[in-house]
Length: 564
Image (cartoon, rainbow, N blue to C red; front, side):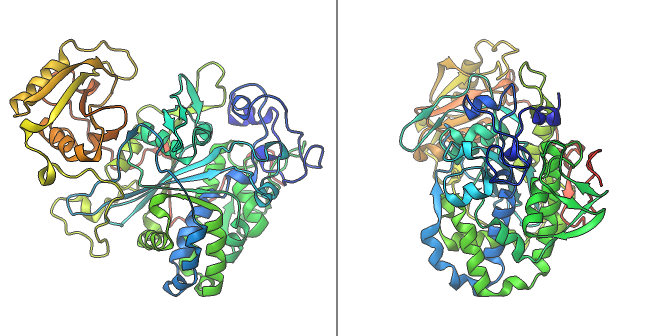
């Protein structure tokens, strides 16, 4: 059973983008199934009511927020007073914290921002936009998740979307107040991560899966979206045939467009971004591709649209965006958002690449229609982001050894960065280290190599680290990592990594260790250094469905049966 098949069962107005607000029995809607938790209703049996408008414009809102704030310096004075309206939450609630992005050899630092679309219905405006009265004031879901990567030299930008129905192992998340959400014992749908303490747990889930250090998040709800779409004056989109997103039983967004290019705004823009029935094969994957086309087109329109030079309009739009947004504490001031927007503006549309995480349909019992990361290719995409490799295959100014740093790309200081070993580390003989044997890997398909912790401990002793012990505790890691407990240990942990030949990205802060601990992973079962990984890809895999920001010829294929 594929995505579209699953959606047909018990789908409601919110699931498929019907005009919200009708409630049970309203024309054009399907009554919402009752009983059971929202979480349970998403993992089997009849499909629950899904959130029509709520999950579709969060990417729009977040990017618009940044672009609006950075469109004209004159508008800066008008929205300084908005500081008090910015809502904040913890960046990462997980236990394995990677820290912020690290500078490259030229002192330039990439930025990774997780854009989250919450379906929260916690006030009248969001309830009116989202509909589905049975979910009012209920726990939200993170139905849109997109990782925005801004390259270190600001020459290119990559966006990776994760399908809403992706099944993952959830990490342990601890709320600021102390409430603990234990790590899941089985696969959980990714959009439920936000219910485990807030957006910081969604960040933790991404970090655990991708090993990408996430510097910031922006979580968006419905407010202000329509006004933003109208402010641009319309966004060109294209369909390969006449399309009408409406099924015989009333499901669908209601979008009706003729073949070719149309300029859409307001309610029609909402319909485009909500549409599943009618695009490609009627799945959420097709909806993601339509959102990518819209966002690329919108970015081009913003660059040439003069209407947003009006400071009064900028102020109104910025306030609408900010009131609809929650950010981490590193973005809790207008000047910080302004600076971020100016960094994003440095990338021309032709160097923006929209992608979807490569995925496969799950074959596990009870998960029909759900997806999992595609082995190999999903990791290839994540690795390119980790290593700051442009997804479009064009490289960057800072990617070539000896190349001069771009004059338009000043070094950015990361939000949190482990210090380099050379600057502040203690002498090796004073650094206490324990080593754990984790060589079996996370899948448990191979037995641990006996005595491996002692062998690596001996390597460190030979390099002058005299306070090293082989820990009796073990672990399970595919890649060798070094974890440390406090900021004061960061530089010493980096020195241990350097001594062992491990990359800087292998050093992680964690509240699950008491000091500096080396976890010898599956990649280091023998020898004096870990097995080097194969060369990184130079371009996103075809399965990522890459769309270039300059591609103004993109046109959505239409699902059979939805033409007129």
